[in-house]
Length: 395
Image (cartoon, rainbow, N blue to C red; front, side, top):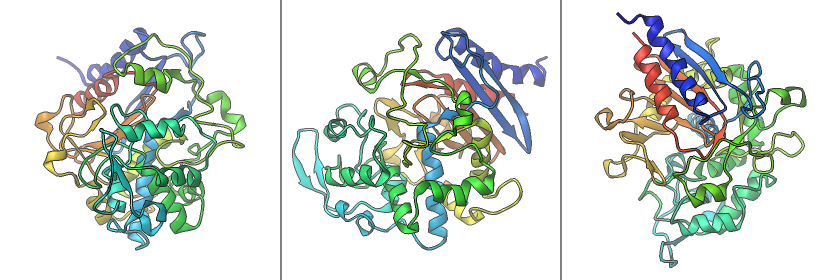
């Protein structure tokens, strides 16, 4: 008979498999269920090449796991009546008033309707990313070096976006994009305060996320995990490739230095597994562990509902679909478990980062998982396998 301990040990076995195969230099996990930690640990090296040990409480570049945090701040402003899903984006940023659509044939035509705040939350704005294949708008993003230039402020970044065409009629498609960066800029405008200050006051401080922010203090740099992976050009050249593990310097695109770091909405945060668990739990309960309410129960219920019509499900980032998943106001959400390709549950949700970080929240099981690693642009089922290993361990 398989014991509970043996089932839990499968989580580490999965992580060990991927580091032994040199697909990742290290993998850390933190799994919570029903009020306690089900399992936690890490395997591998900070740098496999140099056999550098993983530091205590590693700090990671979490890339797009920044997005749910910014979206949660948007929910707080909605509760305050300072932001509405029906607000046109042009109300805050006039450059988005009459966007042109640039189609795949290179033809531009005006959009019929406005981009709304809801479109930003749900990636239906018409905005894109530079790494999206077959997207002329993405090509324009690359010409403006939007992804690789980390020196621009959020305001400068969004100002450039507002001058460029969009990829499709707002609301008509789900297309992963820099929509959350625009939402972040709106948050700054509404609050008349920088994004990092807003997140610090409304989320990081009350949640005790003292090691999460848009830079890494000098005395913590030894705990910043080195990046591995590919450049954007390499990823675009062959998105399905799995090249040998190699170190990559991403400081210019994702600066850690307090003097050069800038706050973005779609990426840019640094965090730890422990800190991110506090945020993920808040998206479950609406409260900090000390009992302080950050988002009301009814707003959380509202936010967790899938907002995509059936014809836009499943979501897909470029050529990579996520069967069974729709999208809510915080991130992905499982709406069709019968279509899923890994263990999950109805209503499970969360998101991921470009360097392999990942989290899930299953509110019905009171079950939260955080997976951290640093390998940019790799195509791997590791995150799904880690989630499946954690699910099979719960009673």
